[in-house]
Length: 462
Image (cartoon, rainbow, N blue to C red; front, side, top):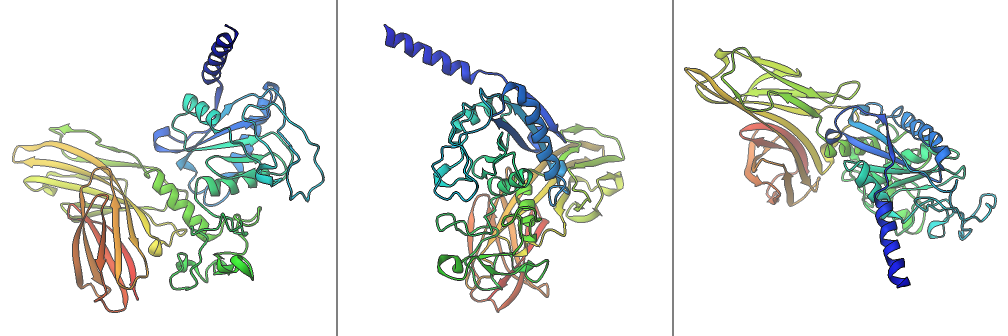
C-alpha cells in the first residue's frame, strides 16, 4: 500500500507542478503575438522576494538589445515578455567540477532553483546551462505558447552563459552583452568568431572553410566595414576555418555585430515573420463603390527601408506607397488582379550571394463587369526562394516554399536582357538547371507568380 500511496503522491505532485500558474509581465509589445517574434525571459535562482529584480534585469537586457543594430532598426518586429518563476533559493549551482577555471575560485555550492541551472556544464566553468528542458517548455506552453525564443536569466554575479535551444546568461559583468551574444547563437544561427572547438565548427552565416574570395558566402561585403576572410588560427583545424571580421560581437563582447552577422540577423527576422502586419480589404467585398481603396499596414524598420511595387493586371501601377485607389476607368471587363510586392532595401542587406531570400505579396482579385464590381477577394503570400550554389559551374539548384502558391515561372536572362532559359518550379520542389552551356559571366534569374515579376536574383557562371 505504501508504494501505491507514494506513486499517487508523485502523480499528484507532477500534475501540480505542470499546472502552476505564474505571472506574465509585458516588457515590450508592438503587435499581435502571431505576427511578431516573441522573446520570453524566465529567471532561475530568484526567490519570490527577488522577482522585481528579475523584471529589472529582463528590462535592462531588453533596453540594451534594442539600442544596438540591427535590433534598434527592427525593434517593431519583436515582443518581449517575462514569466515570473520563483525559486526556493537564490543563486545557482557551482559544482566545482570544471577543469578550465582561471577565475578566482568560487565556493562549491548546490542551490535549490526552479530550472536547476549550473556552472561547470560539460567541464567548462563559464558554461552556465540547464538540461531541465521539460520544465522550461511546459511553462512556456502553459503561459506563452506563441513564444519564439526563451531566455533564462540566472541570478548570479559570476560570468557565464550559453546558447542552444534556449539562451542562458548570468547577471554579472557584461550580462547584457552575454544575452545578445547568446541570442546570436540560439535565434539567429550565428557561430562564435573565436574558435569554438572542432566539434562546434561548421559552415554557417559567419563561418566557412571556403578559401576563394569570389565564392565565400559574404563576398559582397569583403573590403567593406572591415569584412574579409580571417583564419581562426595559424595551425591545425583552426587554420582551415574563416570568419568575416576581427572585432564582432560573436567574438568579443562590447563590439557591434559585424556587417555579415547583421545581415544574417535581418534575413532570419524576415524568415520568421512577414513585414505585412495587415491589409484592407482583407476579405470578400461585394458591390463596392468607386474609388476603391486598398491599403497596407506594414511593420516598418526605423528608418523605413521597405519598398513596395504595385501592379494592376501585370502592369506597373504605383511604387513605394502604402495605399492606392482604383477608379472604374482603371479596370478591364472580367478578372482584374492588383498585386503589391514588398522588399526590404536595407543597406544592411547585400544578399545576391546568399542562398535564400524572402518576398511578400498581397493580391486582390477584382471581378468587374458592365454592372460594376461584383466582388473583391484577397490573399497574402510569403515566398522563401533559394538559388544555389552561387557561383556555380554546371548545375544551378532552385527551390521555393509558399503557403498557397502552386508554382513559379523562372526566366534566366543575360545582363543585356536576352532570355536564355525558361522553366516552371512547383512549390517545395528543387529543380536542377544544367547551365554548363552558358558562357562565363553574370546572369539574372527572374521569378514570376501569376505572370507578375516578384523577385530577381543574380548568379555567377564560372
